[in-house]
Length: 187
Image (cartoon, rainbow, N blue to C red; front, side):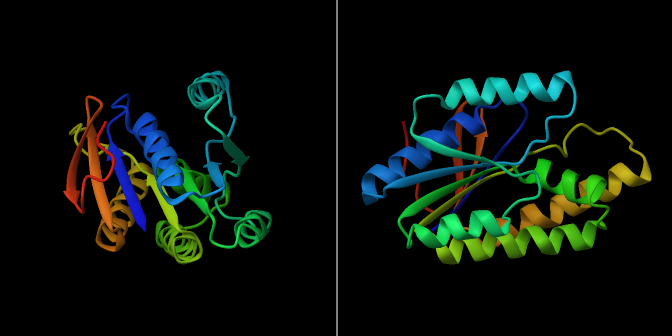
């Protein structure tokens, strides 16, 4: 199953995604929880955010793979080795998109297609795929053309994933609000 989780900055979406991943692994007796971390360690703010997330998931039994460009050949080998016995948590689409557009120099459309392809392939290969994305469209600010292209691409990716997802929720002040699918893991 594909689970999509969105929410604003500081909403609790990452913590919810981690709990959901753990519950799914326990319920299905899956042996592996893989945390695919996409944030690049560029600067003090990124380093602090990465450390915060590492501390939050410490002791939860995740195998963490730092991969700012998503699913590499190495990750596909790990997934294949698990023989459909893993839950993958991808954290998060907005970082992955930024890395592809601004570091790998992809257009918004190219990056969008790459992300959708990677996530759909993962969802087909794993028992469960949990994907975290961001709700960053509500601030009403005007942005540069480059930033607007990024926002448009993120909106398209989020829409596509919401359609494809078996369950889709928005975390608001740590409370998951389900827009699609069953609230499988309320806590």
